[in-house]
Length: 244
Length: 203
Image 1 (spheres, rainbow over the protein chains, first blue to last red):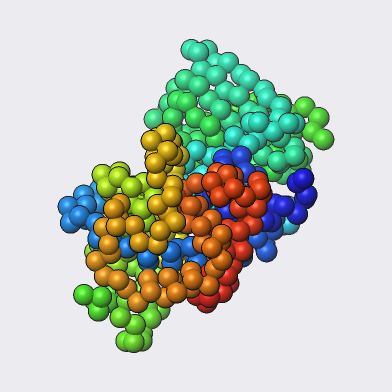
Image 2 (tube, each protein chain N blue to C red):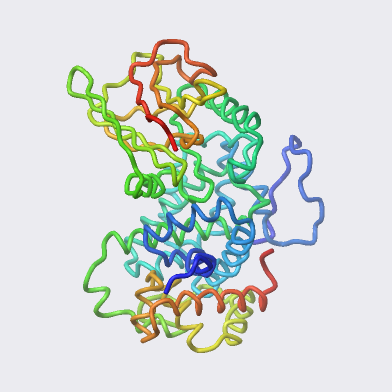
């Protein structure tokens, strides 16, 4: 019943959040490689947003005070690096992508919470559904490492999705002024930053970059803000084996 | 009060210079908010909060929860304003997309069976006085949207209403409307395309 073309037909349901989590993850993956659907979703969202004109309702005045009080306590996130358009990674020059990643790390300096760039996810604090998709991919392969003290880290990668996900349990915070940084070991470029880990004991993180080509994933301890290249030996190395 | 326009502090290289528009320039306000300009953010709130709150209320139905959703939405807008990308869509669509997603997340995670049992038919009614306080100002834009909605088929209207205002998935919508599985998503898409074209928005 499902044909390969069916995925395009989900654009409308996606634009109004009428997909379940699995469908949404699949469609967001599709969006990264289908400019037509991206444009269509954008247009349909414009139309859908106007539906809110028909339900406009003034909120209570007290809400304004609460919101304006809230924001004084929250720092706006830095902008995403200008060099990172949401086009398929594979079509972009590798160098460009890596440069963008490095720039992101530099911009994020100062120890701010790192937000994982998922262009098609509207909210930054949500559970990464694409990560779940990787974890449940049919070709997902996991490598776990136990640390002294009970911490555990598992990297799962899926060649079909081209992504790797790190799941940590009871991870102790990094030393003061330092961060955990993730890396993908790429055949030609060597260790390429896959992002800086937010400080959190239990979390699920998507590694930036193409996991399909990588031979391994690693974690190092780096100065706050992250580094362009690992400056210390990895505290963990997850061998992907012979990638397809 | 809509004639309050963002006052340029002089540091912007390209604020829109025309005096014609009465509505505040949301993109400009977002840019300033991204630089932690609280006054600009307050203006952004004033310009959009009735849409955000109204949509949240329509989807979650409980005023207290709608307030919470609205609060979350604006906090997120504040945090991520610097990442708003005008080339991908309008500020209004960006804000309402965040709102809708959060409202839908709220009802799905709550997934109260009471809500499922009792309320889905209400979404078919264009004006829903029992759950939604009628808008303070029935804007011209709202009239235009209602007019555009009339160009849709009944099924398209119903499917979009259940998805957008009801927060249901297309599979649930199909069941509710007795459509074959897989048809509701098509109706939603066709209907939105027709709405988009009727309203002359989007790319």
